[in-house]
Image (cartoon, rainbow, N blue to C red; front, top):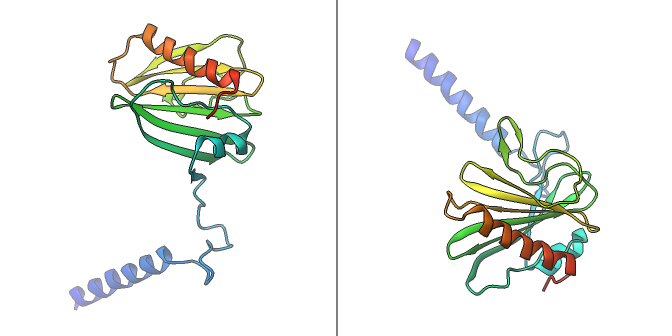
Length: 176
């Protein structure tokens, strides 16, 4: 008898869980009661599209062998972040841009907080984090971030040169 009651209870919980997972309105939109989260990331087809949406000038590296490109917009409510993901020689990079914010948009957390302090600077900041490196600069457009997940393969001087080049292309408005 106890087995039947326990089995019935487990089955009831399973049915309730399945109902909760499939809750949506008939038009495919999430429920209006706020119980579902909307994905804040949208993929686009090109750099030009994400630059137009955000007012940035993210640029493709001027080297051969760029692969694994992805063009995203992250809706951060008060502002939008353009994100360009790519790889060079198998090493993954992410370049981001946001207008209208001075808070760190790197997405890198280190030591219980974001990698960079809030606030604009007039220099290019470069930092290491576990598994990679990040650089940040501000210009008249807004904030640009470059991260690489290289597990220590690049030295800081080489990474800084890459960041300087990409930030220079962004400042020049070269976003083809």
